Length: 94
Image 1 (cartoon, rainbow, N blue to C red):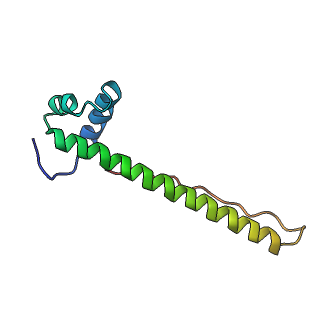
Image 2 (tube, rainbow, N blue to C red):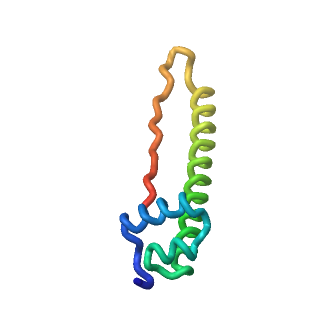
Image 3 (cartoon, one colour):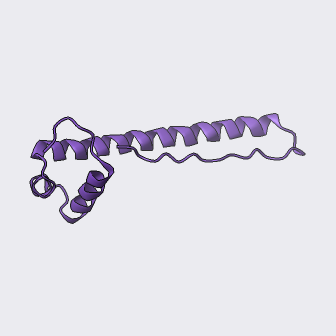
């Protein structure tokens, strides 16, 4: 069992697989992963927090883009082409 180390991709995959089978049964997941209860529980809440922050950040970016589009449309003549945008999707890193 390791302490204060980042979880590997394989460990994250295993955690998600076990969590989908045994939601919030941190003790069982810990036993299956050879980790402590507190490591598994902390990992879950860290993932949950990162996902909330990412979701809030994306909502803010969409709102800001909407405001910018409204401002752009008021400043452009009817003959201008509309702007093009690309959406950046962030991949979670553990």
